[in-house]
Length: 386
Image (tube, rainbow, N blue to C red; front, top):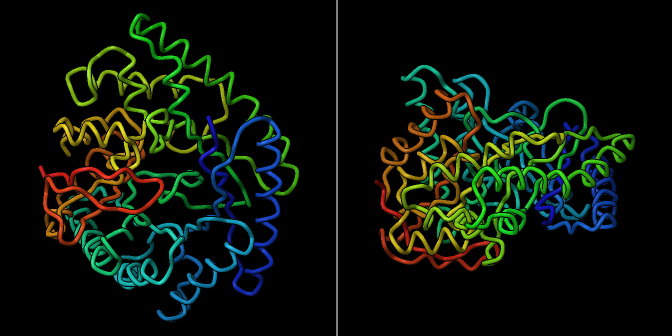
């Protein structure tokens, strides 16, 4: 197990931005040292803000893009690998302006993330928001090499503040921090086909508590330094190596290959386990299935075992929704909007946090291999829009 991210959040003041981020960076480095002293490696440090329209609305368009470049520079200087500006929110008449700026923000930066809220209950408003977000996704795909910029943008449904995973992360209230895990190896060590599912569930909950409780104590000990500890997101995020695959780990339940009958039951049980611990948790705390970030998911996709509608069904009992989905480059705005509407409807019906991070890849058709050169990605076949 490792910490995928220590995510620190605060509300930026434009006149003291550099100083604020420097202070946050010093705290983040101190937190990293404390975590690693407890025996847990830390992969990244991340910085997050409230939804950017709330504090940048008085700036001109070019000023907002310049701010994104500025905060990226300050974050790098302070030791943060990534920064989230939070989602586009606000009055309907203002959102079109901010939506139009997102592709420029993504194209002009390399480590700034943002998102858009898709929580509309009214069907007509949800459809409009889905189309607006689909337009942004298409624009980002065309503005960044290989459509890679959509790694840093997502649509959010019922996602609360203080999720430490990006792109969903945004901040509210007092300066705070949280831990995001990369813990597929914990699941893999416990899941054994000779054990009953009840035994596996009990052992998983116990093992997560055993390994994460020391981290929780580290977080609690750091809180007096001026940043509120929001907790640990237990979502067992996978990595690109086989030993870090959540899919290979879950196949240890003995229900067959991921994508075959039994997958939904296993996914539901895994997420239920994460909800039953006695730990201080935050964020999704559910199963994550990022197709481009898990070698097991990539392999099962290549074998034809994954479909978008299956992944959406798993989202009913999982954590994040549709994550890092490679799609044909000619996917239309209406096709993307239809997919986003499905995610929004499911999240709204279940009142649970979901997100959609869709990557249409210019020039690629369904069935062709992706060609990303990114250490945290596993190349796989472009998925069909069905």
